[in-house]
Length: 399
Image (cartoon, rainbow, N blue to C red; front, side):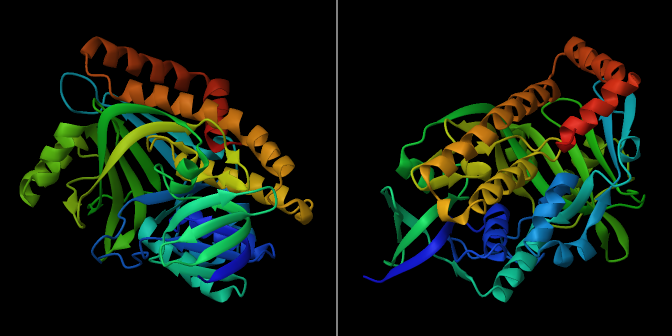
């Protein structure tokens, strides 16, 4: 049985795992990144991830250090304004519209938005440039055995990897987390999300729009123009049975439903991609680390897609982990390093999971009186400038 040695094994080749592999390799570590599913890197290919990711300001230095931002920036749509619309009245139409403008707190946009399939394309290309990385698409991590000095991981192709540190970026059902016996607390909402791409006649103006009625937000996120027309990615959260119904509708009926739900904000929306369905949960691991193991991204925490928090929490994990791994490098994967990582991240992660859980529950409200209360709360928070600016800074993760 072949045995390979490396500084770091990254389990998982999604956006977080690919970023971690590039970041650690750029910092001078040898890295193996394994993922059971080869990445889909073409927009119209079967299985392409039609969701988008907004990289908020604090995440950009992580991408720059990993050598990724120079590749991503030319494709990125800036997010200057986050628009919150309450459409919870008797008729599905906007009754409160509030714009949260990044100019109130910064000379930069809140962040930059990119399609997930494109992120995978550019990140895989970056790994190919780095001499210290071995990328193993189509290969899963199957077992984990740790001792004080190293971790031993068996791969699905039969090889074994000896690593000083295993970084679990292998999703909400993380095999590495389960192998380490780290429990999780999961909150289920009976919700799912539909993700798809659209075009529309009215330009989005780099405004990300969340429309709240019931069931969850309907979010329009700016994309670059598509075939000469303005384009937005949509994440439509609803009760699970309603998402199943919507996903099965013929295109014409689905477009009628999504145009009613979008309140015509950008004019008639035209469906331009497959509809993909994603389950919505909140989840947090009891610990961010185990022996020779660090959890990042959805292996450590899962939140509903509200306020562009999910992947930016993941990159905050990675930033903390790299800071600790490089000071001093000799302590890579040690108990002291991983205990420090848990202390640095866990309380903040708990606070964000709790806050996003509350926002999601508010967005799901169905009773008219409770929706009126939600609208009044939005009005009140927005009208107090210091409160509004504080909320924006908290959302960005800056002081």
